[in-house]
Amino acid sequence: MGLNETVSAERLHIGFFGLRNAGKSSVVNAVTGQDLSLVSDVKGTTTDPVRKAMELLPLGPVVIIDTPGIDDVGELGEMRVKKARQVLNYTDIAVLVTENIELCDAEKGLITIFRDKNIPYIIAFNKSDLRSDKTPSSENQIYVSAKDNTNIYELKELIGKLVKQEENNRRVVGDLIDQNDVIVLVVPIDKAAPKGRLILPQQQTIRDILDSGAVSVVTRDNELPETLKAFGRKPKMVITDSQAFARVSKDTPDDIPLTSFSILFARYKGDLISAVRGAAALDKLQDGDRILISEGCTHHRQCGDIGTVKLPALIKKHTGKDVTFEFTSGTQFPETLDGYKLVIHCGGCMLSEREMKYRVKQTLDNGIPITNYGIAIAHMNGILRRSIELFPEAVKALDE
Image (cartoon, rainbow, N blue to C red):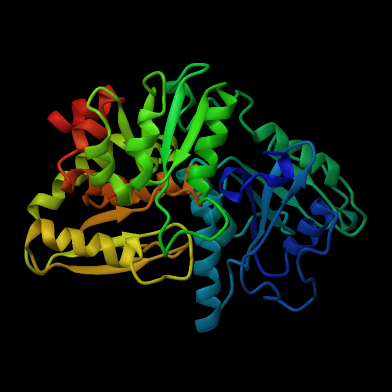
């Protein structure tokens, strides 16, 4: 996958924050070299977060986010501030744009949030063309001018220094396989499957297999038995879409490791151990309990949708209890989780690692178990142990 094809979830997210009329949008436009954000002298011009996936040298593929002012007022203003704060959940690097020589309380509060969330940050003192004292007091401060492009290149260089330099060794499946191994991917084709393409977890898994020098074979669930017979040697593993877990488990010999895309993604950008532990909560549900089912993407829901139809039906059948379900999608993950007995999340392929881990941590900090689609389905089909045998720490968590 080329740089221009890098999906948003795999890009560095750089958020620009500050007060209304501090020049955030002007700085964003100067950094990107584009009229990405609307600029005016009227306070509150930016009313919603503005996102742009792009190439930003020397960083490479990034998502630039311009946010509403954190000092907005009124009922609508409070909603805008809330949206700005939600951006912090998936911001990898924050830039605080200010025109104040001394930071105000609201700006100091933002820095406190940056530190609490462990977000590397830069303070960009804008409108330096109007200043006489332009000497920053620390390494993460810089004087800039969006008007005449003063230190804009240096700001990008400073952002680049905050990026972790160590190579990202996270792999979807590549660390589990060797060159020339055969990996069978089971992809059901039903009404919910996007016509003419594979969904993102399947694409990323295939690419990771190819990067490892292994062989990926894609088949439908009803064709798996014939596919396995066609090989002259045993596949290294079978990876299935969670919806076909029960059927694929029956058709896959016990000596071939079996897992799912969603389990792989729990390990890739979430918390596999917590998800395995969280599945046990399915057996403790009682009448009236509330379950949150959350997806990281937004899509047109069809009949037979896994999150809103198939999974709730399976849970009710498994538990025999009259539980209630609530659903969120996209960025709309609740700030408070009071009253939920369990959170079940998708694999998070459309979320960045930071946001997925934030959601897991937020849930666990509230004392609520969390699991994901694939692990929940494997548990309810009695095949969870088999589906995580590739991960000894997860098996250990299951036995605790």
